[in-house]
Length: 139
Image 1: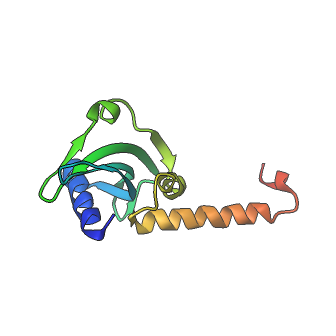
Image 2: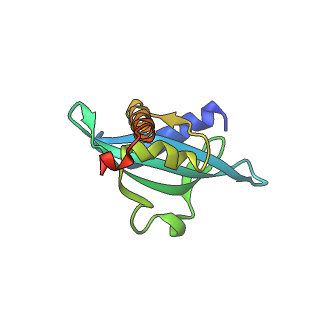
């Protein structure tokens, strides 16, 4: 997916979901499912979002998948019956899991500094626990 489509997609998602300026996209990825005869492309999109709280973000995210159809001059949600109703796929999960979870769909085109910091923090903690001779020390 080229950078122009990524930028259009991010602008569309922001305009659609961040109505009050408090939503924060932690990580986003998309995979192209098909290109039809007409010049549109169907994307499966996975996002992890949280909310701004003062100068930082809430340490938990919600994550979901959705479908977006994008053409040369159009962009719109599609297949809403598959994703628009019901709870998010990931609800109230620690931000440390946002990057690995979104990356399962496709390499992310957006990684916020907060998501990167949380993922790095989780990696360091895992290494520290793996280097401890007595794992029961953490129980």
